[in-house]
Length: 321
Image 1 (cartoon, rainbow, N blue to C red):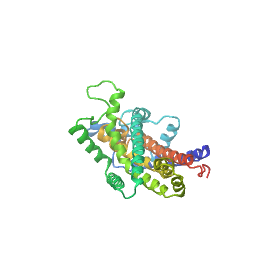
Image 2: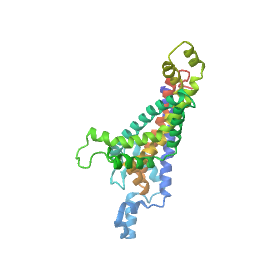
Image 3: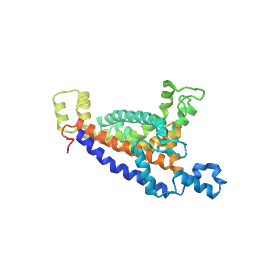
Image 4: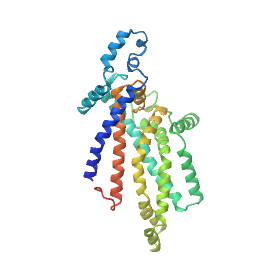
Protein backbone atom coordinates (compact mmCIF):
# COMPACT_ATOMS: atom_id res chain seq x y z
CA UNK A 1 0.00 0.00 0.00
CA UNK A 2 2.79 2.42 0.91
CA UNK A 3 4.61 1.60 -2.33
CA UNK A 4 1.49 2.31 -4.39
CA UNK A 5 0.94 5.63 -2.61
CA UNK A 6 4.59 6.53 -3.20
CA UNK A 7 4.39 5.75 -6.91
CA UNK A 8 1.23 7.83 -7.24
CA UNK A 9 2.88 10.73 -5.40
CA UNK A 10 5.83 10.66 -7.80
CA UNK A 11 3.45 10.51 -10.75
CA UNK A 12 1.52 13.49 -9.39
CA UNK A 13 4.56 15.79 -9.52
CA UNK A 14 4.91 16.02 -13.34
CA UNK A 15 1.13 16.10 -13.71
CA UNK A 16 0.85 19.13 -11.43
CA UNK A 17 3.75 20.83 -13.20
CA UNK A 18 2.12 20.38 -16.61
CA UNK A 19 -1.30 21.44 -15.36
CA UNK A 20 -0.09 24.63 -13.68
CA UNK A 21 2.03 25.61 -16.68
CA UNK A 22 -0.98 24.98 -18.92
CA UNK A 23 -3.06 27.31 -16.74
CA UNK A 24 -0.54 30.11 -17.20
CA UNK A 25 -0.34 29.43 -20.94
CA UNK A 26 -4.13 29.46 -21.41
CA UNK A 27 -4.50 32.57 -19.25
CA UNK A 28 -1.78 34.34 -21.23
CA UNK A 29 -3.63 33.58 -24.48
CA UNK A 30 -6.93 34.77 -23.03
CA UNK A 31 -8.49 37.94 -24.47
CA UNK A 32 -9.18 39.20 -20.93
CA UNK A 33 -6.77 41.86 -19.68
CA UNK A 34 -5.76 41.29 -16.03
CA UNK A 35 -4.65 44.91 -15.70
CA UNK A 36 -8.06 46.31 -16.64
CA UNK A 37 -9.74 43.77 -14.39
CA UNK A 38 -7.50 44.86 -11.52
CA UNK A 39 -8.00 48.58 -12.14
CA UNK A 40 -11.76 48.29 -12.52
CA UNK A 41 -13.58 51.44 -13.54
CA UNK A 42 -10.46 53.50 -12.89
CA UNK A 43 -8.81 51.74 -15.80
CA UNK A 44 -11.28 53.31 -18.22
CA UNK A 45 -9.83 56.79 -17.68
CA UNK A 46 -6.24 55.85 -16.83
CA UNK A 47 -3.46 56.82 -19.21
CA UNK A 48 -1.48 54.23 -21.11
CA UNK A 49 1.61 55.05 -19.02
CA UNK A 50 -0.30 54.32 -15.83
CA UNK A 51 -1.62 51.05 -17.26
CA UNK A 52 1.88 50.05 -18.34
CA UNK A 53 3.22 50.82 -14.87
CA UNK A 54 0.44 48.78 -13.29
CA UNK A 55 1.20 45.96 -15.71
CA UNK A 56 4.84 46.01 -14.57
CA UNK A 57 3.82 46.10 -10.89
CA UNK A 58 1.59 43.06 -11.36
CA UNK A 59 4.33 41.28 -13.29
CA UNK A 60 2.10 40.40 -16.25
CA UNK A 61 4.48 42.05 -18.71
CA UNK A 62 7.09 39.36 -18.18
CA UNK A 63 7.42 36.21 -20.30
CA UNK A 64 5.05 33.34 -19.62
CA UNK A 65 7.74 30.92 -18.44
CA UNK A 66 9.18 33.49 -16.04
CA UNK A 67 5.80 34.15 -14.42
CA UNK A 68 5.10 30.43 -14.04
CA UNK A 69 8.53 29.64 -12.61
CA UNK A 70 8.33 32.47 -10.08
CA UNK A 71 4.88 31.30 -8.95
CA UNK A 72 6.04 27.67 -8.76
CA UNK A 73 9.17 28.35 -6.69
CA UNK A 74 7.19 30.56 -4.32
CA UNK A 75 4.43 27.94 -4.02
CA UNK A 76 6.99 25.31 -2.99
CA UNK A 77 7.86 27.51 0.00
CA UNK A 78 4.19 27.96 0.94
CA UNK A 79 3.69 31.34 -0.71
CA UNK A 80 0.92 31.05 -3.32
CA UNK A 81 1.08 34.74 -4.16
CA UNK A 82 -1.61 37.40 -3.94
CA UNK A 83 -4.92 37.47 -5.74
CA UNK A 84 -5.16 40.54 -7.94
CA UNK A 85 -8.96 40.43 -8.02
CA UNK A 86 -9.75 39.67 -4.36
CA UNK A 87 -6.81 41.76 -3.07
CA UNK A 88 -5.67 39.19 -0.48
CA UNK A 89 -3.20 36.30 -0.30
CA UNK A 90 -4.24 33.27 -2.33
CA UNK A 91 -3.71 31.00 0.68
CA UNK A 92 -6.25 33.07 2.63
CA UNK A 93 -8.74 32.99 -0.27
CA UNK A 94 -8.55 29.20 -0.44
CA UNK A 95 -8.43 28.71 3.32
CA UNK A 96 -11.63 30.72 3.85
CA UNK A 97 -13.59 28.80 1.21
CA UNK A 98 -12.25 25.30 0.70
CA UNK A 99 -13.69 23.96 3.96
CA UNK A 100 -17.24 24.79 2.91
CA UNK A 101 -16.67 23.24 -0.51
CA UNK A 102 -15.30 20.06 1.08
CA UNK A 103 -18.31 19.90 3.43
CA UNK A 104 -20.72 20.21 0.53
CA UNK A 105 -18.94 17.72 -1.75
CA UNK A 106 -18.30 15.12 0.97
CA UNK A 107 -21.89 15.22 2.23
CA UNK A 108 -23.29 14.93 -1.28
CA UNK A 109 -20.90 12.15 -2.31
CA UNK A 110 -21.64 10.07 0.79
CA UNK A 111 -25.38 10.51 0.28
CA UNK A 112 -25.09 9.52 -3.39
CA UNK A 113 -23.12 6.36 -2.55
CA UNK A 114 -25.52 5.24 0.20
CA UNK A 115 -28.73 6.01 -1.69
CA UNK A 116 -27.33 4.70 -4.97
CA UNK A 117 -26.31 1.45 -3.32
CA UNK A 118 -29.74 0.97 -1.76
CA UNK A 119 -31.61 1.67 -5.01
CA UNK A 120 -29.21 -0.44 -7.04
CA UNK A 121 -29.68 -3.44 -4.75
CA UNK A 122 -33.48 -3.07 -4.91
CA UNK A 123 -33.36 -2.96 -8.70
CA UNK A 124 -31.04 -5.98 -8.94
CA UNK A 125 -33.21 -8.24 -6.78
CA UNK A 126 -35.75 -8.82 -9.55
CA UNK A 127 -34.36 -7.81 -12.97
CA UNK A 128 -37.12 -6.63 -15.26
CA UNK A 129 -39.60 -6.10 -12.42
CA UNK A 130 -41.46 -2.90 -11.83
CA UNK A 131 -38.97 -1.72 -9.19
CA UNK A 132 -36.07 -2.36 -11.58
CA UNK A 133 -37.79 -0.50 -14.41
CA UNK A 134 -38.73 2.44 -12.17
CA UNK A 135 -35.26 2.79 -10.65
CA UNK A 136 -33.37 2.50 -13.94
CA UNK A 137 -35.74 4.92 -15.66
CA UNK A 138 -35.19 7.44 -12.88
CA UNK A 139 -31.42 6.94 -13.10
CA UNK A 140 -31.30 7.51 -16.86
CA UNK A 141 -33.51 10.59 -16.51
CA UNK A 142 -31.33 12.14 -13.81
CA UNK A 143 -28.21 11.27 -15.79
CA UNK A 144 -29.32 13.73 -18.47
CA UNK A 145 -30.26 16.52 -16.04
CA UNK A 146 -27.63 19.27 -15.53
CA UNK A 147 -26.84 20.12 -11.89
CA UNK A 148 -27.71 23.81 -12.31
CA UNK A 149 -31.14 22.89 -13.69
CA UNK A 150 -31.75 20.56 -10.76
CA UNK A 151 -30.67 23.36 -8.44
CA UNK A 152 -33.06 25.90 -9.92
CA UNK A 153 -35.87 23.34 -9.79
CA UNK A 154 -35.11 22.59 -6.13
CA UNK A 155 -35.13 26.29 -5.24
CA UNK A 156 -38.48 26.78 -6.98
CA UNK A 157 -40.10 23.77 -5.31
CA UNK A 158 -38.69 23.64 -1.78
CA UNK A 159 -37.89 27.32 -1.16
CA UNK A 160 -40.43 29.28 -3.18
CA UNK A 161 -43.47 27.01 -3.47
CA UNK A 162 -43.30 24.98 -0.25
CA UNK A 163 -41.12 27.33 1.83
CA UNK A 164 -39.62 24.47 3.84
CA UNK A 165 -35.94 25.09 3.12
CA UNK A 166 -33.78 28.20 2.60
CA UNK A 167 -32.94 29.06 -0.98
CA UNK A 168 -29.25 29.76 -0.51
CA UNK A 169 -26.43 31.16 1.54
CA UNK A 170 -24.90 29.75 4.69
CA UNK A 171 -27.03 31.35 7.41
CA UNK A 172 -30.37 33.08 7.79
CA UNK A 173 -30.60 36.65 6.56
CA UNK A 174 -31.06 38.25 9.98
CA UNK A 175 -28.41 36.12 11.67
CA UNK A 176 -25.02 37.58 12.56
CA UNK A 177 -23.47 34.28 13.70
CA UNK A 178 -22.84 30.97 11.98
CA UNK A 179 -24.48 28.13 13.91
CA UNK A 180 -24.45 24.40 13.21
CA UNK A 181 -28.23 24.31 12.91
CA UNK A 182 -28.34 27.04 10.29
CA UNK A 183 -25.48 25.49 8.32
CA UNK A 184 -27.27 22.12 8.38
CA UNK A 185 -30.56 23.56 7.12
CA UNK A 186 -28.85 25.58 4.40
CA UNK A 187 -26.78 22.54 3.39
CA UNK A 188 -29.79 20.33 2.67
CA UNK A 189 -30.72 21.72 -0.75
CA UNK A 190 -27.23 22.15 -2.32
CA UNK A 191 -25.99 18.82 -0.96
CA UNK A 192 -29.20 17.09 -2.03
CA UNK A 193 -28.99 18.49 -5.55
CA UNK A 194 -25.31 17.57 -5.89
CA UNK A 195 -26.04 14.07 -4.55
CA UNK A 196 -28.89 13.59 -7.03
CA UNK A 197 -26.59 14.67 -9.88
CA UNK A 198 -24.10 11.93 -8.88
CA UNK A 199 -26.73 9.31 -8.04
CA UNK A 200 -27.42 7.69 -11.47
CA UNK A 201 -23.95 6.23 -11.92
CA UNK A 202 -23.92 4.56 -8.52
CA UNK A 203 -27.42 3.15 -9.04
CA UNK A 204 -26.55 1.66 -12.43
CA UNK A 205 -23.16 0.31 -11.34
CA UNK A 206 -24.56 -1.33 -8.21
CA UNK A 207 -27.51 -2.76 -10.13
CA UNK A 208 -25.20 -4.28 -12.75
CA UNK A 209 -22.64 -5.53 -10.26
CA UNK A 210 -25.12 -7.10 -7.83
CA UNK A 211 -27.16 -8.53 -10.71
CA UNK A 212 -24.08 -10.26 -12.11
CA UNK A 213 -23.04 -11.48 -8.66
CA UNK A 214 -26.43 -13.10 -8.09
CA UNK A 215 -25.66 -15.46 -10.98
CA UNK A 216 -22.18 -16.43 -9.76
CA UNK A 217 -21.45 -19.90 -8.35
CA UNK A 218 -20.65 -18.71 -4.78
CA UNK A 219 -24.03 -17.01 -4.50
CA UNK A 220 -25.81 -20.02 -5.95
CA UNK A 221 -23.99 -22.18 -3.42
CA UNK A 222 -25.11 -19.91 -0.59
CA UNK A 223 -28.70 -20.29 -1.73
CA UNK A 224 -28.28 -24.06 -2.01
CA UNK A 225 -27.12 -24.17 1.62
CA UNK A 226 -30.48 -22.72 2.59
CA UNK A 227 -29.33 -19.24 3.59
CA UNK A 228 -31.99 -16.56 3.76
CA UNK A 229 -32.37 -14.41 0.64
CA UNK A 230 -31.54 -11.30 2.66
CA UNK A 231 -28.29 -12.86 3.83
CA UNK A 232 -27.40 -14.00 0.32
CA UNK A 233 -28.10 -10.55 -1.08
CA UNK A 234 -26.35 -8.42 1.52
CA UNK A 235 -23.43 -10.60 2.61
CA UNK A 236 -22.54 -12.33 -0.65
CA UNK A 237 -23.90 -10.62 -3.75
CA UNK A 238 -23.50 -7.05 -2.48
CA UNK A 239 -19.87 -7.58 -1.47
CA UNK A 240 -18.93 -8.88 -4.92
CA UNK A 241 -21.14 -6.40 -6.72
CA UNK A 242 -19.66 -3.40 -4.92
CA UNK A 243 -16.14 -3.96 -6.28
CA UNK A 244 -16.76 -2.09 -9.57
CA UNK A 245 -18.32 0.76 -7.60
CA UNK A 246 -15.01 1.35 -5.81
CA UNK A 247 -13.35 2.20 -9.12
CA UNK A 248 -16.27 4.50 -9.91
CA UNK A 249 -15.51 6.61 -6.84
CA UNK A 250 -12.24 7.85 -8.29
CA UNK A 251 -13.65 8.52 -11.76
CA UNK A 252 -16.53 10.59 -10.36
CA UNK A 253 -14.30 13.10 -8.55
CA UNK A 254 -13.83 15.42 -11.59
CA UNK A 255 -17.61 15.47 -12.20
CA UNK A 256 -18.15 16.03 -8.48
CA UNK A 257 -15.88 19.09 -8.52
CA UNK A 258 -17.56 20.52 -11.61
CA UNK A 259 -21.01 19.86 -10.20
CA UNK A 260 -20.05 21.42 -6.87
CA UNK A 261 -18.96 24.63 -8.62
CA UNK A 262 -22.31 24.88 -10.42
CA UNK A 263 -24.32 24.06 -7.31
CA UNK A 264 -22.38 26.56 -5.20
CA UNK A 265 -23.15 29.26 -7.75
CA UNK A 266 -26.89 28.48 -7.80
CA UNK A 267 -27.21 28.38 -4.01
CA UNK A 268 -24.68 31.14 -3.18
CA UNK A 269 -22.75 28.62 -1.10
CA UNK A 270 -19.55 30.27 0.24
CA UNK A 271 -17.15 27.79 -1.33
CA UNK A 272 -14.48 28.25 -3.96
CA UNK A 273 -16.90 28.59 -6.90
CA UNK A 274 -17.07 32.37 -6.84
CA UNK A 275 -13.29 32.62 -6.47
CA UNK A 276 -12.82 30.24 -9.42
CA UNK A 277 -15.12 32.26 -11.66
CA UNK A 278 -13.42 35.53 -10.73
CA UNK A 279 -9.97 34.05 -11.23
CA UNK A 280 -10.90 32.77 -14.70
CA UNK A 281 -12.64 35.90 -15.95
CA UNK A 282 -10.03 38.28 -14.52
CA UNK A 283 -7.01 36.17 -15.53
CA UNK A 284 -5.83 36.08 -11.92
CA UNK A 285 -2.71 33.97 -12.54
CA UNK A 286 -1.78 33.00 -8.94
CA UNK A 287 -5.33 32.22 -7.82
CA UNK A 288 -6.23 30.39 -11.02
CA UNK A 289 -3.10 28.23 -10.87
CA UNK A 290 -3.61 27.40 -7.18
CA UNK A 291 -7.27 26.44 -7.63
CA UNK A 292 -6.48 24.30 -10.67
CA UNK A 293 -3.63 22.55 -8.85
CA UNK A 294 -5.97 21.94 -5.91
CA UNK A 295 -8.62 20.39 -8.17
CA UNK A 296 -6.00 18.24 -9.92
CA UNK A 297 -4.66 17.03 -6.59
CA UNK A 298 -8.20 16.14 -5.50
CA UNK A 299 -8.71 14.05 -8.66
CA UNK A 300 -5.39 12.23 -8.17
CA UNK A 301 -6.21 11.61 -4.52
CA UNK A 302 -9.65 10.28 -5.42
CA UNK A 303 -8.16 7.78 -7.84
CA UNK A 304 -5.61 6.68 -5.23
CA UNK A 305 -8.30 6.17 -2.59
CA UNK A 306 -10.39 4.15 -5.06
CA UNK A 307 -7.44 1.86 -5.85
CA UNK A 308 -6.63 1.39 -2.18
CA UNK A 309 -10.24 0.55 -1.35
CA UNK A 310 -10.38 -1.92 -4.22
CA UNK A 311 -7.22 -3.62 -3.02
CA UNK A 312 -8.52 -3.85 0.54
CA UNK A 313 -11.91 -5.19 -0.57
CA UNK A 314 -10.47 -7.81 -2.96
CA UNK A 315 -7.42 -9.67 -1.57
CA UNK A 316 -6.71 -11.03 -5.06
CA UNK A 317 -5.64 -7.54 -6.13
CA UNK A 318 -2.12 -6.68 -5.09
CA UNK A 319 -0.92 -3.18 -4.25
CA UNK A 320 2.47 -3.72 -5.82
CA UNK A 321 1.27 -4.95 -9.20
